[in-house]
Image 1 (cartoon, helix red, strand yellow):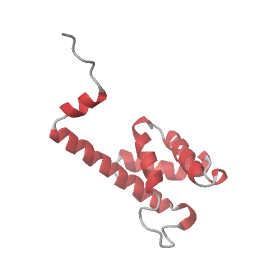
Image 2: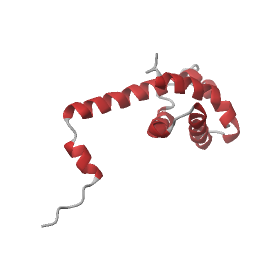
Image 3: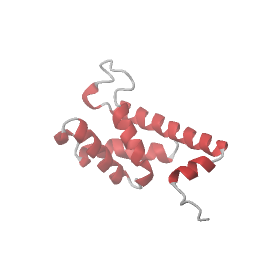
Length: 114
């Protein structure tokens, strides 16, 4: 009898509870760090004008989804620029304009937010 091919789901099914909890905690910490830095950046001053803290949650989720493939502040600036340009005004979110927030976020992610 042939065994069925392994799927990506098999990895999750075989993941130990502690591994899953650690992965989930790591993801939540990353979301918190990205949210904090993006909210501090606050393009358009929405947060400072009273918008909810989750105002940029859609953009944060997109950034976090790409974090594992980002290895430089410039690569992170490219991601931020791409995401915010699609959601808002592209001319305001050039890679150069996104470099300061990308550098700050890259450092925060590497140091665990401290």
